[in-house]
Length: 289
Image 1 (cartoon, one colour):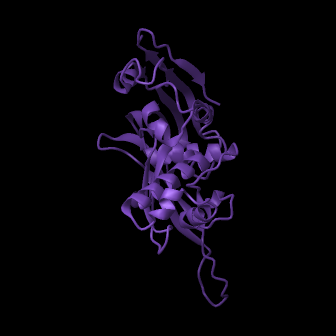
Image 2 (cartoon, rainbow, N blue to C red):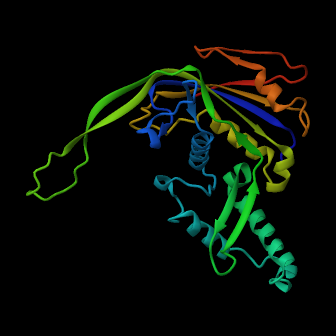
Image 3 (tube, rainbow, N blue to C red):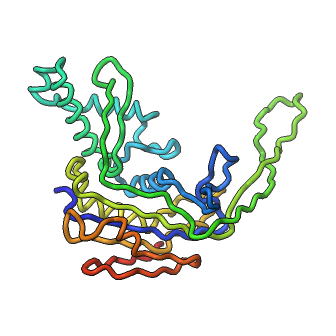
């Protein structure tokens, strides 16, 4: 059974001496918007959700290069292997294989099976756009029921940049007179509070098979989004989900719009917050790990 109730959620994230989301087009400096507020993109947040779901043993289609656990070298390779394992779709599709109707039946069945196999596909959706001479040459768009906004800091951030030396010269030729150290820059913000919002749509969940159990899986990983995510830019303990606010409506259409629900949360620069009362909709307030 697909998702039975509309869900809204919010994440309050604390950052201390870390680079929450570097911009590769700007020397990997922390991302900022035009007003100077820090930003973590929705792509960045969904990457971390996927990683935590993968840590929990769920099948993930869009895997990070350093976290591949199924032997596939690319998304195309993963898709092609999946396609070869599919049973024959339907008699109708076989009989009308060359017709537009048959092709659409085939695509619908591929999308259905992809959603069934991979949790991130039935959650966030996916565009399968690969070239090929047979069924591997497809363009299939799956629209997912889970949306995640970019996170923005409550106040403009101050970026601290430090010059460092990096040991990157891997040339083993003894005749090359080069130092093994080169100069570089490392960027961080000293402290910041970020807020991200998201929602889950039962109407779109009907198309992908996203269920109440799937929603609970995402709920479980949201509160520990940065566990196992440490790096030089984000040392262990420098990123933390301070609070997960979880609104579960009593029907598929929702008691209030997502805009009104998200607007009921006011977050302060120190991470404290105020929740305005919404009649009949009481949120669950969950501490982060």
